[in-house]
Figure 1 (cartoon, helix red, strand yellow):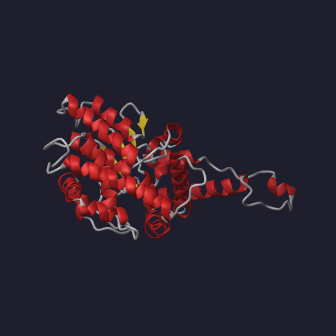
Figure 2 (figure 1 turned 180 degrees about the vertical axis):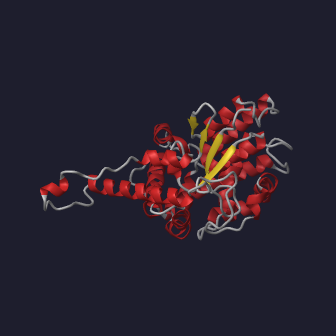
Figure 3 (figure 1 turned 90 degrees about the horizontal axis):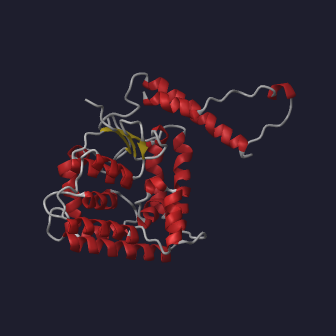
Length: 344
């Protein structure tokens, strides 16, 4: 029997199987479709085969990072959560996913949208307000987002990766909005909140009193909605304006809670906070033999990469004192070799 595909995801917290929107979409769909994936929950994206999360490494050694590409691959493997949908329901599903892109990830003109999808292909289905709420709003970013990643990422990545990720998210938001000078502010927050709240209201009306959007069985639309709403519902943001609106929509709140109870019961029982002694589902790269050695080597390679970057960009310089001391620079081993060693 062929080995299952491997799915690499951000690890979870706040009672969620993952803290990432895209990872939650893929995890939910795989659970709905019954796909037998080997799950790798990690807190270091550099240990992913693509360098991004989520990432699916298939039996054919192909690596997929977009949620839509991963779902298409699973469908080709006969794991199709939309198998029982009628043609009309399938069209409705696509329409509501497009609605989430337009309202939760609004694009004012088509050109910035294409540019974002080209520049950030692995985060196609994020939301503007989620970017703002988790990465741009100052208090939320400092007290929750940066703190979480700093506590969960390995040293020394936790010193510089959260800041790099924030800059990438800000650039993504600027591209989506078509405004290179865009900064956090009350007017922007109001506009993004209005669009996101409108989308939630429409989703709530469509769901009605049903258990899932198309009856008693979950579909890809349920996976997308869950992936986008669950972090808003379960996170502990100081500025939780949109969370309050979501909690006022009882059917959407129950929808997320029921999926957690039915498909991710272990994660719902876990308490939030920094990493404890419990092992991630499916195992992590850190839970393998020679853990200490691998962590030490990873830290050394990352530190070497940081120093090399600092020298190349001119952030750090060394005065020319003795010529012979500079004739044979140290041989810094590429980062990729140690990443592959960690995959073993």
